Image 1 (spheres, rainbow, N blue to C red):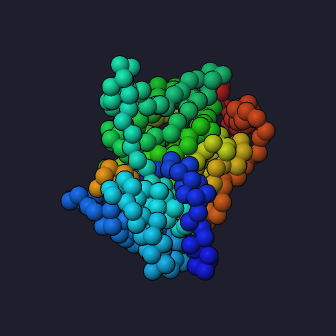
Image 2: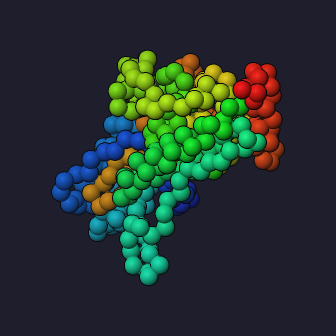
Image 3: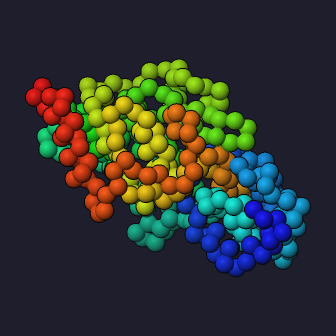
Length: 342
C-alpha cells in the first residue's frame, strides 16, 4: 500500500467496490463488544480488529488510516452510518477478500421475516457410469444466524459419500465449480476419509502458520501442528480411489481451500479453469450491531508448504464443461488399476 496516496484510495468508487466483496467467509468467530457503542467507539473497535489481525497490518500507516476513517464517518448518528467508511477501510487494506457483511432479514412466502425461508444449498451426489461417485459442493454461509447450517451441511455430505461409496470403485469427481465460499470446515470434515493423510494445507500469517489437520474431534487449523493426531471420523471402502477435482472462475475462498486440501492427495488431478483468486483466509468478527467484519488474516499454502500467490491453476485447463475430461481421466486410471473388474 502506498501510504502517500492512502486518502485518494478512499473514493466513492473504492467504497462501492468494497460492497461487492462482502461474500466469502472462513471459519473463526470473534466476539462482539458487550455494550452498545457510539459511532466513534464502533469505528475504533473495527479498526482495532484490522490493526491486530490483518495480514497486511505492518504495511499500513495507522494514524493516517484512523484519521481518514474518522473524517468519512464524522456525521454518523449510529454505528450503521459508519458502514460505508469501514468498507472503504477494508478496501484500503490492499486485499480482495475482506468485507463488512450486514445480515438482512429473510422473507418467508407470507412476507414475514424468518430463518426458515429459502433452504440453503446442500451437497448433492450421484453415481456416474456405474463406478464413479460424483459430488457437488455448493457454498456454505454460517454467519448471520446460520451457525447450525454447518452441521447440517457436513451431515448431508457424509451421508452422500457413504451412499455413493459402493459406486465409486473407479474414483470420485468433486465438483467445486459453483462453490463461491463460506465455511471450509464442514466441507473438509464431510470429505474426511477422501483426504488422505494430513496436513491438508496451511494458513500462513505474520505470527506463523497453522496446519489443517485431524484432531481428536474434527479437522481444524492448529498452530504448531504438522501431523494428524486422529483418524478419519468415518470409513468407506473406496477412500483410496482416484479423485478428479473440478474448479473454475466461480470457485472462490472456501471452494479454493477445498481444492487446495485435495491437491496434495495421492491420485488427485484437477480440471477446469483458473479460480477466482480469493486464496487467503478471512477471520470474521461480529460487531455490536450484528454486522460482521471479515479481516483477511493470512495467506494459504499447499501441503508441501508452498504459499499460494494468485488464483489456483488446474492440472488440466479446460474450456467449457470440465466433467467429461475428468471422467475420461478416471476411466483411464481405472483401466490401469483394473478396479472396474473387481
